[in-house]
Image (cartoon, protein in one colour):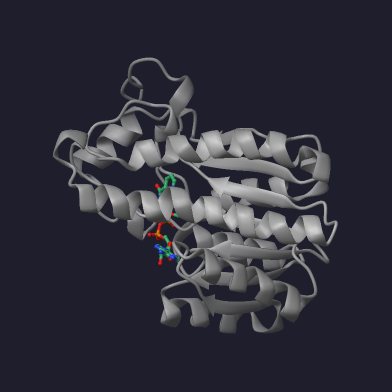
Length: 255
Ligand code: NAD
């Protein structure tokens, strides 16, 4: 129960890793408001958690809707201690072939959406003198070269930069700003990475732990970062990647 008494907002919390943050935070004693555009899924997650969780429709590309999401957390649960900027879209293909419309959509959700979550949550934390935590969701591709992910890595690189800059800007308010950079994690976003597929084999060969992450393993990192155990961590991205970023070349075959 290390998050007992905390109130958290999770964008994109209706499914995937976002849902795992929601469930882990509630299990650790927090109250959680989900902001998402998947109403049916979001309402079902909230209903399964009873009074500890609420769903609010929120398109993260709208700063007004994100402000209303934060206000709802304060009105319903009496505060705002943690905001997880998790909502995100994936991209495929080459940067050379990415259309302007695709670029705009991806950046609107993955960068502007995170920027609005941070700004709207921090405004309220400052006004309420809450020593809160902002947790942004990046990816290993923020700093690794990849092929076939379009502008997705570019958007995640921006999340890392925003995290560093805001950590400095908000430190005097006692607000910590951190990020998590997951490696490949088993969610709908990775639905095309089926067991046995060439892409799956490639990930397994490039990962010392030889498997993708489970959403709950990423949620554990968020619970730590949100807690007072991480009181001296700000500005950092924690890469939960099964060892992928420290591996040179490929893993040898087993045995
Ligand atoms: P997912 O597609 O299962 O979930 C994403 C959630 O974001 C969905 O609930 C979706 O409705 C929501 N969302 C999308 N656009 C939105 C908008 N405009 N407003 C509000 N909500 C919106 O994906 P996931 O795998 O759970 O990914 C969650 C986060 O983790 C993303 O930021 C993703 O980039 C990041 N990530 C995922 C992986 C992975 O391998 N799955 C790896 C690294 C980083």
